[in-house]
Length: 551
Image (cartoon, rainbow, N blue to C red; front, side, top):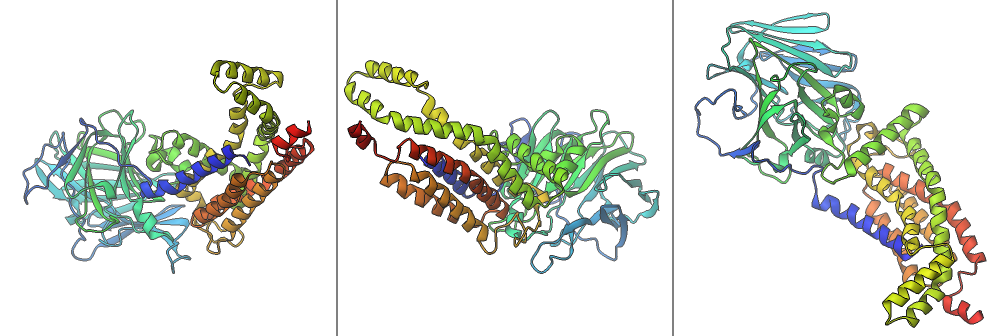
């Protein structure tokens, strides 16, 4: 293993270690645009009514409705939703096929709810004639028929229906309000928190955020930790708005095919007044205009599965982008994730075996390039005495030195760029490893997947077996590579330090990431052994000075 490869490992190690320290949340805070965001200081009690078309009322704190509320269950093939009456809003969602991974709750089903406030996930408020009518105080008549649940009130005359869809996590929400005037809107309060169902509840809380997408613009993500107690108002039309944590999502979407002008109008956000390093609660409100007394949107409550969200359209799959704050990582990480999902669907094996197959496949694809790079390295070592002699001879004549070096490279079928190009294939696996680091942070398909002794490949190995195997394989790879190299104390020291450093660094990373890297190292051993034997046959283990004396 030459110095350039060791330097590449060191740089990658620095990136992986420093990145979580500099960016404890997986999302960056978007830079507010001057024309779409502003900060509003808190207003005194009983504020004056605001214009209903240009802005949204400040989000109100979630409050539990006094008295006994009727629970209205709605069951689909993939989830069970419970609605609150009064209010006609969802209280909680039980997601089938996903476990609650919190300690002591591993065998239960994942439930999305607001545990601290014990209130519904959404709140509806009607902004009519400058007055705010809170629907949490209205008792509705309920009728369920043919997959549609309809809430009807006579005073005021409001109808809200939830129609199930084939995907199982999305419902078509349609509503009508009688005797409306132009400019009236429906205000919708998003969840102020989402209860964690993950093994690492602190990491889950760091992912709490609101997000939205304006037409023809990228997704904007606002982590709870980046909000202030002052109100932040992002204005303009929005195709969807959402609240999420690491793996779960509550999203309100403009229905596909609806005309322009039916988008959500702005998102007003503020954090809770509670103090602490991790912000667990915040408040957000959006506005939906009433057209002839009608409003409509699609409601998604479920997992952040890329395939599920991609089918919804409107780039909802980017609500939790893979390292979106790092240019170039998002598309590459998405590609890697999609390849892994495809392999799972094609071969019908555990995701652990998918990672093993993926690691071996990457090494096989890179075998020709690595073979050429290693042989170029051997040839460069063979040329070192001649190159050093030219550098010594033309030490004070740069132009003659450059011309002489070019002639030497050409005489051996090489170019001055050969050392750099020869090192490039060795660096190609590094972007894959870097992308997988973010894939394991965000892909719900890896959540809770057991493999061999590993209870969850998205979490660290509880016994640290895989990181040790990864470090040992890296050390063996370095040892084989040094066997055909000229003695170099600095290279030898680095060859022992790098495996040790990587082992410590990878101890608390996802065990699936460690598994992939260990497989990469093991799959590279045969090629490293072949090249080492070629180097030995070429006599490259002898120091250049000794070889020149023999000749």
